[in-house]
Length: 530
Image (tube, rainbow, N blue to C red; front, top):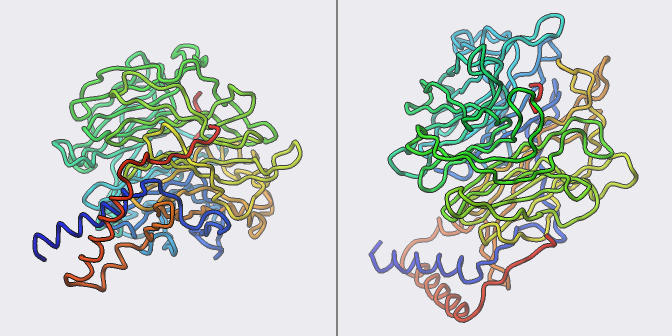
């Protein structure tokens, strides 16, 4: 292709995308978003909770997901990391367990350091730029009397765009690890590929329980000595993100490290030098009115666990909060490297019901958020729960009207955990997640719509499925629609004609933009068991 044609192509793509610049999700409005059950209904079909998801940056059609998967309960065992992979943009999935589970006689399983334990928990996935997947979690043993032992954080690795299991590394030393979160540097800078983990633990037998930070610079083979972030040991329930400059941010709820009393603010620690220097800790939300128990009308446990995302325009903190009486989803943003934070913006536009477990991702200058939402519920008991979504095009200043993702409401009060600790407690996990590519967002959640398809003689209904949806971030508004399969449409064509047509279209659309303001949509706007 000549240089001229290449420039024309770039002009056309830029023109089509920027000319309208106010995107809208495909399949919204009167068209429902398709909901995909990842594991399906083939026995043994048990709970999949605390789901996690990541999109391959080299190929947006490849998506990996995970969850606490309880399929081994039918064999008298416990929960274990499920690993699911799609190569068609999330339409179909393969399903497996992370090697090392009880009864795994494969060479990979027998050689895994996880093989000495019978439980994993708190799954969390991330891709690096090279197509490697890191899968973090906690591993421990539950005794025959139901008592959990010491928990250890770990990171497993899959290579070849997540298709091939490679191995697992334990982060030993800290005691009673909990609620880990991971992120990887994908900036292309000097620390590209560095893997960062924050998790809660006692650093030593005589130190306090708080958020620790560690890094790997060799693809997850080894990890640095952990340190407290924040340094005053007040942090718990962390989130992690890496900004466009390679700085790492760790969010946490603040607790008194001695008494464990809630301090009612959310803090963000900034770590520079490729994960070596704790540069600052700022109270990003102060005061914060955390959710510290079941949402009104529900009985399942819930707690405010903030999540972070970032891009070249800022760092974004999503959290739920009860300051208005009910539970609502908020976002605060920093545009100066985490030093100052904006007044929290309410993202859910429905005032009724409860809105909780927010999750956030940033890609292609679009910020995507999803959360559980009971706005359609009737009565005082929560029997109808949905997932809603909203996006921002202006770095979190405003958000779109909310979009219902679930095409069926479900009852969150129907399924007991069925595993220790708290096996008879109603359970929805502690978080959901969303992943994003430049033209699509992929929320993942636990869903009870088919709850009683699988029955347990002790616990009753136990079919709690991991669901996902693909929300195409197509546009622009005003009839100049960019199809979600735009790149695929170009594939069969070659030669100057297609590029000439696209170039002219881009120039026309750019001309229409001159002198016109970009439209924006402004909606009214603790330590947990593992």
